[in-house]
Image 1 (tube, rainbow, N blue to C red):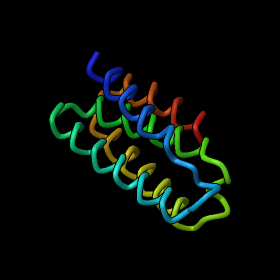
Image 2: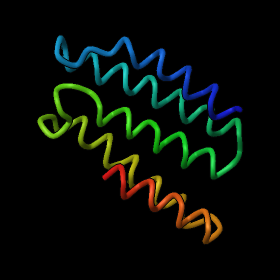
Image 3: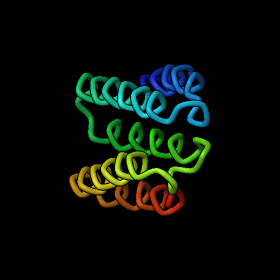
Image 4: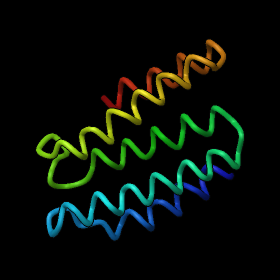
Amino acid sequence: MYNEFIVQYFLSLGSNINAEANIIFAIEQLNKILTNTKKYIRFSKKKETEVELLLHFCSELKKIKPSMQGNVSLLNIFNRQIDLVRKTMMTLHEDLQYDYELALNKLL
C-alpha cells in the first residue's frame, strides 16, 4: 500500500518532466524526485521498500526521451541508483535477492 502510494505520487511528478525542451530543467526535476524518494525510504525503514522504489525510479528514468545514453548526467544518476540497489540487495534474504535480481536484469 505504502509503495503503491509513493509510486503514484512520483508518476504524477514525473509526468511534468520534458527532457526534450530543457535537459537542465529535467535533471533538476529528477533530482527533486530522487530526494523525495530517499526521504520516503527513510520513513519506511525497510530495505525492500528501498529496492522497490529505486528500481521503479530507474525504470521511469529509462523511459525519458531523449535517451539517457546521450546525456552523461542522466546516465550517472541511473548508474548511481543501480549501484545503490545492488548494495542494498546484498542485505536482503536470498529469496528476495533472487526476485530483485531478476527485476534488475530486466531493467538493464
